[in-house]
Structure formats: structure tokens, C-alpha cells
Amino acid sequence: METWQFLINQGPETLKLAWEHAWVVAVAVTIAIFTGVPIGIWITFNRQAADIVLYIAGIIMTIPSIALFGIMIPILSVFGYGIGTVPAIVALVLYSQLPIIRNTYAAIKNVDPAIIDAGIGMGMTRFQVLFKVQVPMALSVIFAGVRVAVVMSIGIGAIAAYIGAGGLGHYIFMGINQTYDAMINAGALCVAVMAVITDYIFGWIENRLVSKGLRT
Amino acid sequence: MIRLERLTKIYPGSTIPAVDNVSLHIPEGEICILIGSSGCGKTTLMRMINRLEPITSGTIKIDGKDVTHMDVIALRRSIGYAIQQIGLFPHMTVFENITVVPKLLGWNKKQMNERVDELLSLVNLDPAIYRDRYPRELSGGQAQRIGVTRAMAANPPVMLMDEPFGAIDPINREVLQDEFLKIQEKLKKTIVFVTHDIHEAVKMGDRIALLDAGNLIQYATPEELLTRPKNQFVKDFVGADRALKRLDLLKVADAMLKNPVRCSTEDASEKILERMVEKNLNYLLVTAPGNHLVGYVNIDMLRGHKGVVGDLARPMSITVRPDQNLKDALSKMLTYDIGIVVAVDDQGVLQGILNSKTLVSVVGETYDEHGGHWGNITTGGRIL
Image (cartoon, rainbow over the protein chains, first blue to last red):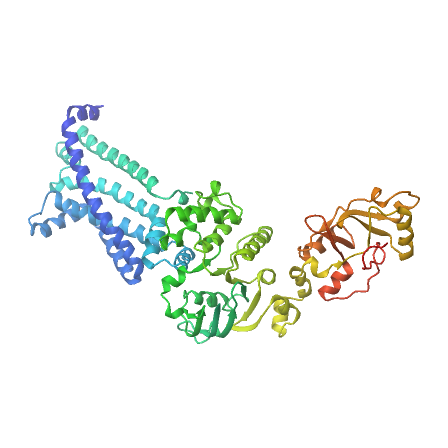
């Protein structure tokens, strides 16, 4: 109840923070999709590269988020971006790589060899097999990876407030400092709601993009 | 049309050839069956034709052109390729699946629409119902039909088919095979067809190439393979029942007695009775003018009857067509326990008569046979 009251009183402020949060996540995930998917596709051609890339992405995933933000500060301050949204975006891009690359790689690798053989036998080029057969068939699993990355980024994005990136994490950290429960709850609630809504939206987009022939 | 010369394939890292010095010629418009047990090299041999497998040595010429000198993509687009049902793209509709190659070749929308409708009608699928379906919404038989249709889409003169009817139940397989043979009769494609089913090979093939361990053992027509197997291996492969397999190959027309004895509907019963007793016949066929089969009469029916046989004739419930294969005919004879079956064409005109005796002798076995309850069947036309 108190949380509700807080949100009503702080309406404009809450919207501003939610917008910041969404913006950071959106930029990060967009970059992650446009890097992760091509990397995932590329490593299907090269087994060795696949092992290395997946290994590195796995390691990045295991670094605690708060530590990663800490590491960003000295590295990026060289370019004058030690704190704020830039390190936050960089960190989220890195975190998003594993689910996106791994799903893309696995999905494309999983396409039945007989189907690829049919494509090649009918006279498709390697490129055509990839983009007319393998990627469309892999799309739903790639999307699942993107959805994981998005939801995760919204969660981790809350911690980015710690290095001055703003967003809904601001309420959580301020609430902890002030032992103001309503504020903490309000921050947490907003993050959760945002994650659920975004996941739903992505599910809807997935439904439109993935061929009806692949629905089970 | 397709000429393989001293073709050899050795997979990297192996010393034993998968295909060993195979030469064969496939004439235009024929179905050549590649058959053998698994691992005999039949699929590898087929895949070398559209260069899915690189050639180790030897040449393949299609229409006199060496395939290794052709652009590989253009080569593959000019050859229809059908594999088991699994080869349909699940994310594409029937329409999209069929038009894969036409699209690659840059056909326009109108051409593709017409072609898809034409092809679907050819395999007895209503375009209005099926063109927008996805493979998962098709039965096995329907998917298989689409697979074959897809291979024919751009009207290639040559088609490669790797067990196209493999993943399907025996009843539907027969239906699909018959359907395909009918289509082939019209289109006359040059087809390389891989199977491990000797039954299918005998039924579908104009020629059969039997392979073992990469070697071509015998290349012959089905008839020759069954009647003159080259060695024990071929004998074993075609099976001890190879005589029965010829039943698939032969038509009723090949074994029937043409011009069987008969009488006309206009003939007087008394006279016919007399002749039947004289000739020792129990039953007799009755035809109307134009040789249309009306039915039959027997001696008991005729006894004491005044008038013409046309009044008495009972219709024949079981008949066969001259273009049916002998297996179907024999099966009918066994099912209804009849020693004789009459062949009529679609217009009901009497063509001949098939009895178990002639059937057996045609298939290559002889039994000591006793007339059957029709009495001794003779030829020579009208009994009067």
C-alpha cells in the first residue's frame, strides 16, 4: 500500500527513471543482437572458433555484475566514459552475448542435415541455404536467446544505477541507503513489471516472425 | 542421356573405394534403379551425378556434357532432386517448397502459380486446399508427393530420387508408385532412382543396376535380372521368389488366352447345349454384338430351355483389365477361389481369358493341372 502511495506521489520521477532504464537496455540489447547473432552464425562454420567464443562468453557470464561494472570504470575512463550510461551499456552488451550466441549457434547447428542436403542438392548456394533455410528454421530458438538477454539486462540494468547510469535501480539503492522500504519495493516492482511486459512484447514479435509451419 | 564412365569414389581417409570403376549408360526417358544393400555405394553413386559427392576418378556426362565442367549450382538446378519426406522445408508452405528452384531460376509469380497448380493436380492434390499448407499439416503420403513434385518443379529433364517412397506404409507406397509411373509415362524424364527394395526396383525400373561393395554386379532390365541372374549373388539378392516377382512385371495381356470360345446372346440354347456337351464344356462365355461381355451360361441352365442364351446369361462378377499386372489378377483369383478370370477392357469388350494354367506357365513354372471346373478351355473363337 505504502509502495503504491509512493509510486503515485513520485509518478513523473518514476516514469523518467523507467525511461532511462528502458533506453539503456534497448540500446544494449540492440547492439547485442547485431553482434551476437552474426557471431553465432559465423562460428557454425568453424568448430574451433565456436569453442573459444562460447568459452569466453561463458566466462563473462560468470563475472558478478557489480564486479563487471567496477572493472568498466578504469577501462572506460581512459576514453572519458568511466561512469554513466556508456559502461552500463557495454556491460549489458557483454552479458547478453552468451544467451544470444549460444542459442544462435545451437539452433543453426541443429537444423536437420537432410534438409540442408536437400537445399544444396536443389542448387542453393551455401549463403542461400543459410538465409533461406537455416536461419528461418532457427529463428524461434534465436528469439528465445534474445528474450533471455532482454529480461536479464533489465534485471542487471538496475545495478547500473550504482555507476551513475540512472534507471529504476536508483530507487533501490536510494531506498537501501535511506532504509525506505516503500522506495525499494517500488524500484523492484517496476523492474519486474518492465521485464514481464518486455518479454510479452518479444513473444508477440516472435510469433509474427517465426513461420507457422514450425509451431508445434 | 547419362553416361558414367569408370566412375570411382574413394572417401578421404579410406582405402576401399565406395564406388569402384562403375560404367553405365542410362538412356533418355528411362528409370534406372540403383539397388543394393546399405553401404553398397548406390546413394554415393547417385550423389556424384549432381556433384554432391566429389568424383575421385572417371567421368559423368549428361547429354554429352561432362558435369565437372559445368557450374555446380547451375548443374544442380537443372537436375530434380528428391529425397525422403524429411527433405521438405518445414518453415515453407507447399507452394514455397515447390517453387524453391523456380524462384532460384527467377521465374515470375504468374509462372510459379500456374506451375504449382499444374503439379498439384498432377499428383491428385487440390491446389485450393494444399498450396498454403505447411509440411506438418500433411500426411506422410501427401508430403512424399510434394517432395516428388518439388523435384519436378522447374521441369528438369533429369531427376535423382533417393528412396522417395521410403518412409511410407506399404499400401500408400503402392499407390504412390502407380501414380508416379503414370506421370512418368507422360513426362518421360530420365530418372536415377535409389532403393533397397527389390520389389520396388522391379516395378519401377526400366533398368536395374545392382551394386555390391561399390561394384556394379549386373545392369539389366528387370525381366532379365529375374530370369537370367548373372551369378549367385544376384540370385540371392532378387530372392528365391523371383519367379513370383515377375508377376509384378507382366500384364494380364501377356498371359491371357486371346479369342476364347464363346457364344452370342442370339444363339439358340439347345444348339449351344449340344455343342457344350460335345466339346466337354461346363461353362461358356456369352457376348453381345461388338464382342461385349454379357456373362456366362452353364450346362444346367441350358438344359430344357427353349429360346436364346441371352435370356439366361448371368453376369460375371469378377473380371480383370488387360493392363493390370498379373499379381493383382492372381490375387483376385485366389481371393475368390476361381481358376479362371475373364479380361475385359474399360468399355466391357471381351479381351481374353486368364486361367491359372497359362498364368503359371508364363511365369516360368509348370504344374500338372487338371482343367478346372470350366472344363477344358480352348481357343478358336465362337463355339458355333
